[in-house]
Image 1 (tube, protein in one colour):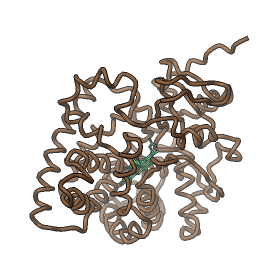
Image 2 (cartoon, rainbow, N blue to C red):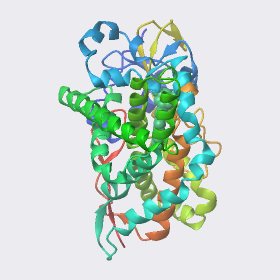
Image 3 (cartoon, helix red, strand yellow):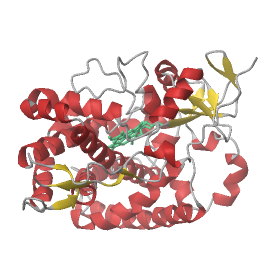
Image 4 (cartoon, rainbow, N blue to C red):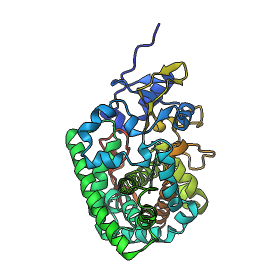
Length: 410
Ligand code: HEM
């Protein structure tokens, strides 16, 4: 007898508020399940890890089912033109070439050199928070959102004072990794893409005139100019600058927001971390990434029949590798629903796996370590302003983050 399908509808507000009960139920049923719209869901850690490393699966947007038919209608859209060039949406060899060009900027040693600058930005943001006992504030617009945008502006060599505008564009563009996107959101993303390209073109012209080579923008413009675009075309340059901007901010914002919420809901872990932040902080950040991941899923499309357990997924179908579910798989993590900042090893998939493994992972980790380190040291009395109230999760399916996080100074 075949098991009746499980109505997995990730648009359900219950999934948004807490995806884990449903993801546990899907994982317990088997290794590959379809959701209500026919997308395959892989929830086991071993299958997600293998799938993200497989070359039978593609990330290339132009090889997506239906894309060839759709292409003539979007060919003039700046958004599609730039997204097609993202390293994230390309398979080798294009992916390999593009990734090599940005890798150097995110090497751990380069990122560590930015630590003092990140600490200075964090201190400046924290200094603007109210200090009177009982005062409340929202951590999202005061620290979690501005910190990653200001850091990525710095890394790229874009003026910090433009951050409100660049953040608005990046917010609109980030929605294109959502499985469900409304027409108005798509149009806003398209407009943001066009405006951001114009903005970047102006900066590239300025950068060329100055000859500066220190920033990521400078390095990539030099790579483009070295052989007249043969190594990096103009569209690839613009597209990947936008990708770095978009990929580098919302995910890190969510790590800071989700992580702070989790810490405040687990006072014992918080006390443990406060007692020895030097030793425990890196592991605590990884546990935050595992426990309440900023990215719920990573999509791939099948280009040659692909087996997940007994199920063979046919070519042309899409699989969502539910990394948020894999990160709570009891086959890999003992007591997966327990938040344990000393968990070791912690092979979570919050940054993906395989060739598209997050290039910004060292930067995101360092930003979070600095932000939590400063927050715990400078604001030892912080608590949830309304501990009994359900957290305000954003109405998104893939990117898991908070609309607001109200805190109170003791
Ligand atoms: C907590 C923060 C972050 C999380 C959870 C995160 C998560 C991820 C994940 C899951 C992927 C893989 C997507 C896939 O395989 O389809 C990815 C790729 C990527 N991320 Fe991140 N990311 C974070 C921060 C950053 C930062 C700070 C940057 C850059 C400044 C960045 C840039 C990128 C880029 C460029 C890719 C594509 C890499 C490739 O295609 O080779 N990310 N990220």
